[in-house]
Image (tube, rainbow, N blue to C red; front, side):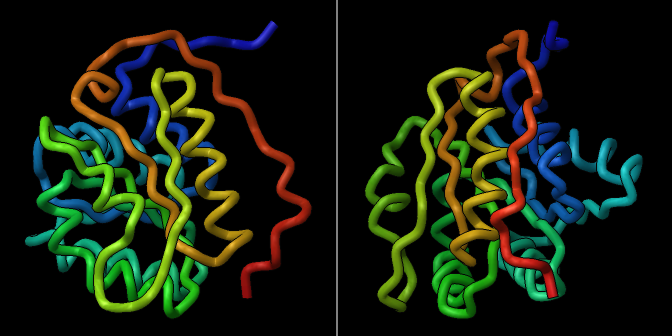
Length: 184
Protein backbone atom coordinates (compact mmCIF):
# COMPACT_ATOMS: atom_id res chain seq x y z
CA UNK A 1 0.00 0.00 0.00
CA UNK A 2 1.41 3.43 -0.94
CA UNK A 3 2.56 5.72 1.85
CA UNK A 4 0.62 8.93 2.21
CA UNK A 5 1.96 11.95 4.10
CA UNK A 6 -0.06 14.86 5.49
CA UNK A 7 1.48 18.05 4.10
CA UNK A 8 0.59 21.67 3.51
CA UNK A 9 0.27 22.43 -0.21
CA UNK A 10 3.36 24.66 -0.48
CA UNK A 11 5.50 22.08 1.29
CA UNK A 12 4.07 19.27 -0.86
CA UNK A 13 4.88 21.25 -4.03
CA UNK A 14 8.47 21.76 -2.84
CA UNK A 15 8.88 18.10 -1.84
CA UNK A 16 7.44 16.97 -5.18
CA UNK A 17 10.08 19.08 -6.93
CA UNK A 18 12.81 17.42 -4.87
CA UNK A 19 11.37 13.97 -5.58
CA UNK A 20 11.42 14.88 -9.30
CA UNK A 21 15.15 15.64 -9.09
CA UNK A 22 15.13 19.41 -8.57
CA UNK A 23 18.50 20.34 -7.11
CA UNK A 24 18.43 24.12 -7.50
CA UNK A 25 15.85 26.58 -6.26
CA UNK A 26 16.04 30.35 -6.29
CA UNK A 27 13.36 32.58 -4.89
CA UNK A 28 12.48 35.90 -3.40
CA UNK A 29 10.06 35.97 -0.46
CA UNK A 30 6.61 37.11 -1.62
CA UNK A 31 3.26 35.94 -0.31
CA UNK A 32 1.86 33.32 -0.97
CA UNK A 33 4.98 31.57 -2.33
CA UNK A 34 7.33 32.21 0.62
CA UNK A 35 6.62 28.83 2.22
CA UNK A 36 8.09 27.08 -0.82
CA UNK A 37 11.33 29.05 -0.41
CA UNK A 38 11.41 28.28 3.32
CA UNK A 39 10.88 24.55 2.76
CA UNK A 40 13.49 24.38 0.00
CA UNK A 41 16.05 26.22 2.15
CA UNK A 42 15.75 23.48 4.76
CA UNK A 43 15.29 20.43 2.53
CA UNK A 44 17.51 20.94 -0.55
CA UNK A 45 20.84 20.84 1.34
CA UNK A 46 19.79 17.44 2.74
CA UNK A 47 19.79 15.99 -0.79
CA UNK A 48 22.87 17.82 -2.09
CA UNK A 49 20.92 20.68 -3.64
CA UNK A 50 21.22 24.45 -3.44
CA UNK A 51 18.60 26.99 -2.40
CA UNK A 52 19.29 30.67 -2.99
CA UNK A 53 17.31 33.49 -1.38
CA UNK A 54 17.76 36.16 -4.02
CA UNK A 55 17.69 39.93 -3.56
CA UNK A 56 15.01 40.32 -6.25
CA UNK A 57 12.78 38.30 -8.55
CA UNK A 58 14.97 39.24 -11.50
CA UNK A 59 18.08 37.96 -9.74
CA UNK A 60 16.25 34.74 -8.82
CA UNK A 61 15.12 33.91 -12.38
CA UNK A 62 18.62 34.60 -13.70
CA UNK A 63 20.04 32.18 -11.12
CA UNK A 64 17.57 29.58 -12.39
CA UNK A 65 18.74 30.39 -15.92
CA UNK A 66 22.33 29.61 -14.89
CA UNK A 67 21.40 26.35 -13.19
CA UNK A 68 19.27 25.22 -16.14
CA UNK A 69 22.10 26.10 -18.51
CA UNK A 70 24.37 23.79 -16.49
CA UNK A 71 21.89 20.92 -16.82
CA UNK A 72 20.51 21.05 -13.28
CA UNK A 73 16.80 20.59 -12.69
CA UNK A 74 15.78 24.02 -11.38
CA UNK A 75 12.64 25.67 -10.05
CA UNK A 76 11.46 29.10 -9.00
CA UNK A 77 8.22 30.20 -7.33
CA UNK A 78 6.65 33.62 -7.08
CA UNK A 79 3.33 35.37 -7.50
CA UNK A 80 1.85 37.53 -10.27
CA UNK A 81 3.84 40.65 -9.48
CA UNK A 82 7.10 38.71 -9.26
CA UNK A 83 6.34 36.76 -12.44
CA UNK A 84 5.74 40.10 -14.20
CA UNK A 85 9.28 41.16 -13.34
CA UNK A 86 10.61 37.86 -14.72
CA UNK A 87 8.91 38.05 -18.13
CA UNK A 88 11.96 39.02 -20.17
CA UNK A 89 14.05 36.24 -18.64
CA UNK A 90 11.23 33.70 -19.07
CA UNK A 91 11.01 34.59 -22.77
CA UNK A 92 14.77 34.21 -23.10
CA UNK A 93 14.72 30.85 -21.25
CA UNK A 94 12.20 29.61 -23.82
CA UNK A 95 14.27 31.05 -26.66
CA UNK A 96 17.41 29.35 -25.30
CA UNK A 97 15.48 26.08 -24.87
CA UNK A 98 16.38 25.83 -21.20
CA UNK A 99 14.03 23.68 -19.12
CA UNK A 100 12.84 24.83 -15.70
CA UNK A 101 9.69 24.84 -13.59
CA UNK A 102 7.99 28.09 -12.57
CA UNK A 103 5.40 27.91 -9.79
CA UNK A 104 3.02 30.88 -9.89
CA UNK A 105 1.22 31.04 -6.54
CA UNK A 106 -1.37 33.57 -7.60
CA UNK A 107 -2.88 36.20 -5.35
CA UNK A 108 -6.49 37.38 -5.54
CA UNK A 109 -6.05 38.95 -8.96
CA UNK A 110 -6.27 36.75 -12.02
CA UNK A 111 -2.95 35.65 -13.48
CA UNK A 112 -4.62 33.52 -16.15
CA UNK A 113 -3.69 35.61 -19.17
CA UNK A 114 -0.20 36.27 -17.83
CA UNK A 115 0.31 32.51 -17.51
CA UNK A 116 -1.36 31.30 -20.69
CA UNK A 117 -0.41 34.02 -23.16
CA UNK A 118 3.21 34.42 -22.19
CA UNK A 119 5.02 37.66 -21.70
CA UNK A 120 8.32 39.13 -22.60
CA UNK A 121 9.17 40.02 -26.15
CA UNK A 122 9.76 36.72 -27.83
CA UNK A 123 6.95 34.83 -29.57
CA UNK A 124 6.79 31.87 -27.25
CA UNK A 125 4.30 29.63 -25.58
CA UNK A 126 4.90 27.37 -22.66
CA UNK A 127 3.09 24.52 -20.96
CA UNK A 128 0.77 25.57 -18.13
CA UNK A 129 -0.47 23.07 -15.53
CA UNK A 130 -3.25 24.07 -13.12
CA UNK A 131 -3.87 21.70 -10.19
CA UNK A 132 -7.01 21.94 -8.06
CA UNK A 133 -5.95 19.74 -5.12
CA UNK A 134 -2.72 19.23 -3.21
CA UNK A 135 -2.36 15.68 -4.59
CA UNK A 136 -2.87 16.99 -8.11
CA UNK A 137 -0.24 19.68 -7.43
CA UNK A 138 2.24 17.00 -6.36
CA UNK A 139 1.56 14.94 -9.49
CA UNK A 140 1.71 17.95 -11.81
CA UNK A 141 4.95 19.33 -10.35
CA UNK A 142 6.60 15.96 -10.97
CA UNK A 143 5.12 15.95 -14.49
CA UNK A 144 6.28 19.56 -15.01
CA UNK A 145 9.94 18.60 -14.63
CA UNK A 146 9.44 15.74 -17.08
CA UNK A 147 7.73 18.00 -19.64
CA UNK A 148 10.31 20.78 -19.19
CA UNK A 149 13.13 18.37 -20.02
CA UNK A 150 11.23 16.67 -22.84
CA UNK A 151 10.22 19.90 -24.60
CA UNK A 152 13.22 22.00 -23.42
CA UNK A 153 11.00 24.79 -22.23
CA UNK A 154 9.89 26.45 -18.99
CA UNK A 155 6.73 24.86 -17.56
CA UNK A 156 4.36 26.94 -15.44
CA UNK A 157 2.47 25.38 -12.51
CA UNK A 158 -0.35 27.58 -11.24
CA UNK A 159 -1.39 27.64 -7.60
CA UNK A 160 -3.02 30.04 -5.19
CA UNK A 161 -3.26 30.87 -1.50
CA UNK A 162 -5.83 28.16 -0.83
CA UNK A 163 -3.84 25.42 -2.58
CA UNK A 164 -0.64 26.53 -0.86
CA UNK A 165 -2.13 26.52 2.63
CA UNK A 166 -4.45 23.50 2.48
CA UNK A 167 -3.17 20.35 4.17
CA UNK A 168 -3.90 17.04 2.48
CA UNK A 169 -2.59 13.49 2.64
CA UNK A 170 -0.46 13.04 -0.48
CA UNK A 171 1.49 10.28 -2.15
CA UNK A 172 4.71 10.91 -4.09
CA UNK A 173 4.72 8.84 -7.28
CA UNK A 174 7.53 8.50 -9.80
CA UNK A 175 7.37 8.88 -13.56
CA UNK A 176 9.06 6.69 -16.13
CA UNK A 177 11.60 9.07 -17.65
CA UNK A 178 13.29 6.75 -20.13
CA UNK A 179 12.08 8.84 -23.06
CA UNK A 180 13.86 12.01 -21.88
CA UNK A 181 16.90 13.32 -23.72
CA UNK A 182 20.20 12.89 -21.83
CA UNK A 183 21.51 15.89 -19.90
CA UNK A 184 24.68 17.03 -21.65
